[in-house]
Length: 145
Length: 154
Image 1 (cartoon, rainbow over the protein chains, first blue to last red):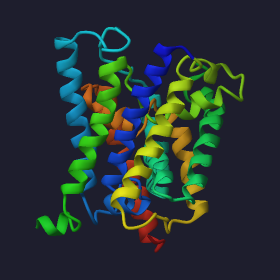
Image 2 (cartoon, chains in turn blue, yellow):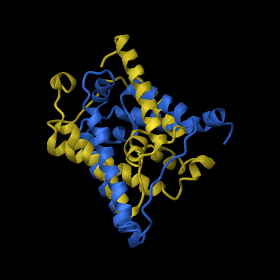
Image 3 (spheres, each protein chain N blue to C red):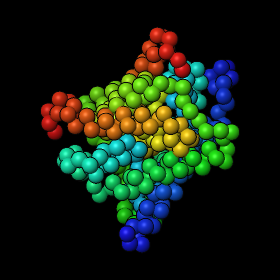
Image 4 (cartoon, one colour):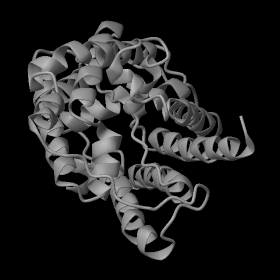
C-alpha cells in the first residue's frame, strides 16, 4: 500500500470511529432502543437521524462552495443523489420489515458488535445472506436490469 | 409531555446524532466519498463471489472494510470509556438473523439504509432518499407494533 492509500484509509478509519462512537453514545446500537422508538415508547431516535442529517446537510451545502475539492484526494466535492424507481419503495419496505422485526440496521449492527453485543453477529450474518439473495430477487423486481 | 415522549432524555440522542453526521462529513471533507453502511455487505461479498453485481464494488471494497472496522472500534472505545458494562441484547438470535436477511435484501434493492438514505441522502436533500426513509419507517413501525401486539418482547 502506498502512502496516499494509507492516508486514505486513515481518514476513513477516523471517520468510522466518530460514526461508530455516535451510534454507541445514542444507544442506537441497541436493538431494544430502536424497537422502543418504533413502538412509540421513546421518540429520541428522531434526534439521532435528523441531528446527523442536519450536520451532513450543512456540510454538503457549504463544503462544495467553499473548498470545492476534497482535502486529501483533490476530487470535486459534489452531491450524490440516487435515482428514483420502484426498487426504492420495494426495497425500502423489505428493509423496514427487517428493521422493525430485529431492531437493527447495518451501521448500528457493526457498532453493536463494538459494544460487546455478540448475538448481533447473527444479524450481520443474516445481512450478508440477504445481500447475496437479493441478486436472485432483483430480476423479479426490475426485469433483469 | 417531554418526559412522556422522551423518557430517557434527549441529550445523548442529540450528541450521538452529531457524531454520526460528523463521521460522514469527516470522510467527505478529506476524500469526497459519501459512505453508507450497507454497501459494505455487497462490496465485501465481491471477495468471495464473482457475481457482476458484487464485482462493481471492487474499487471501494477495501476502504469500506476500513470504515466498518472504524465503526466497530469507535463503539468499542466509547463503551470502554463511558458505558458501565458491555451490552448484550435480549432479542432472540433467530429474530436477529431473519431480520438481518430482510435488511440485507431490502437495503441493497432499495439503494441504501438508515445511513445511506437517512443520513447521507436526506442531508443531500435527495427526494429519492426522503421517499426511502418514509417507506422504511412506516414498514418498520407497522412491523415492530405487530411484533409487540403478539406479545413478543422486547
